[in-house]
Amino acid sequence: MSRAKILTDSAADLPEDFVRFLGIEVIPMNLVLDGRIYRDGIDIKPADIYQSFDKLSRMRSEPSRYEDYALVYKRLVRENKQLFIIHLSGRLSRTCENACRVHEDFKHTHDCRVEIVDSRTCSMGLGFLVMEAARLAVQEKSVSEIKEDILRKIPGVSVYLSVPDLKYLRRGKKIGGLKSLMGRAMKASPMLAIDPEGKLVVAGRLFGRRGNFMMEMLERIREDIGDSPVELAVVHANMPDYAEELKATFDDKLDCRKIYLTEVGPSIGINTGPGTIGVMYLKRTH
Image 1 (cartoon, rainbow, N blue to C red):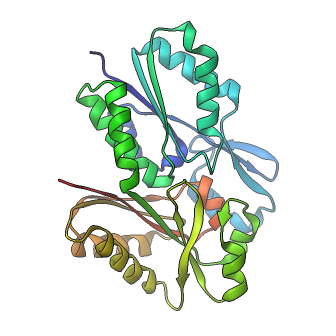
Image 2 (cartoon, one colour):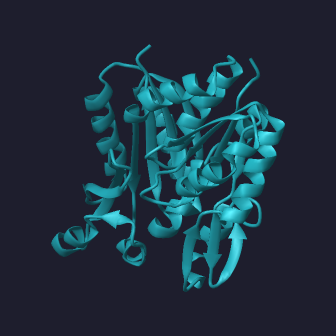
């Protein structure tokens, strides 16, 4: 059986070396900054955005246009016998919807077997699932087997973000529960999470120094997984030193089978701003 090709989007925040090594296809999100369109990871890098964040008056992320997605899809189904597509949560972007539309329009024009999954998560939460799919593809699992395995693993993915300043969240329209948080405690730093439906929601409040986030996350993870192993990522928006500190702490205190450090992409970062720090993990059962 031929090896399945994996297609995802730039919101997965995957380490570039992993993408190159396993030949994962990454379709870029579009970033609209003061009316100009940039392709995420191609025309602009996350650090470029965060360093000039307060100079931008209008910003938003958009999925790749239908026409651009169709070109990628048609090339991949021509070059491969199997294609597994997994995108960020449909509650945060229309990317997965576009994938389904393109597949429906062109599925009778090729012999490639295609499966599509809405990950119901984002950033390295999605990244973990993409890496799982890529490992299964290396084992020459079929796209149906990959889909079945990934759907089982989605509930084991957790995403948490600590946001330093409420002003950036006021611009966004994809975060639930924010209004009540601001009304109760303007001095609190929100802790956000992805809920089971794939929505970005307020999961709690942090007071005082950012070290509270580290302690809060250790407590939450231990309560969630006990002594079980975990695959974990620390993501950041222009906070490399603090992210390194978190990574070292989690590596020391938890049974981390793998631990990654990467930047949080603009699809989330433009709503949360520079200084955002995140912890994301995939529970392991063996």
